[in-house]
Image 1 (cartoon, helix red, strand yellow):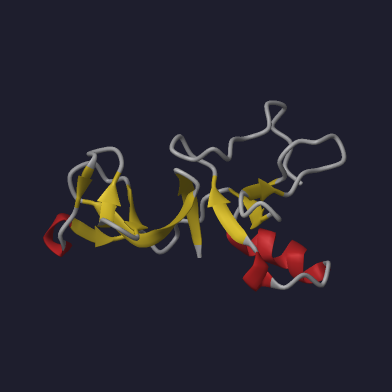
Image 2 (cartoon, rainbow, N blue to C red):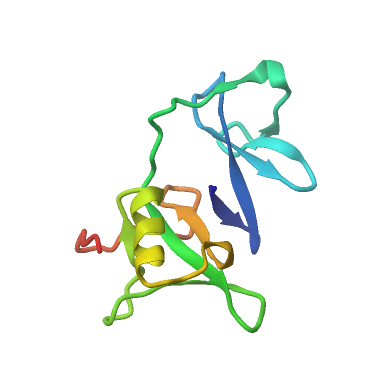
Length: 122
């Protein structure tokens, strides 16, 4: 499951897109399915299934001791960005990490997870 963090809460990608703007739709606990581009709650009739080949770039986050999201960083302190969630999961499994402890944060304009300025992908 991938998503974004809005107001310190993880919002899961619903695997739907908004019919109006074709943007991903996010599951928000208190609102249901929400489109941030259109800034509105969507009914089932306002959405359609997301392209099955939608594999966004992701960063990996976890909850720290203050219950705040923190991103995995490289040795230089930059957020590690993966080409997609499958590669991110593979990296965690290779390092014998429990996937249940991590969140895959999509790299996009809504997310606070941004690409490294030098474009490195680890």
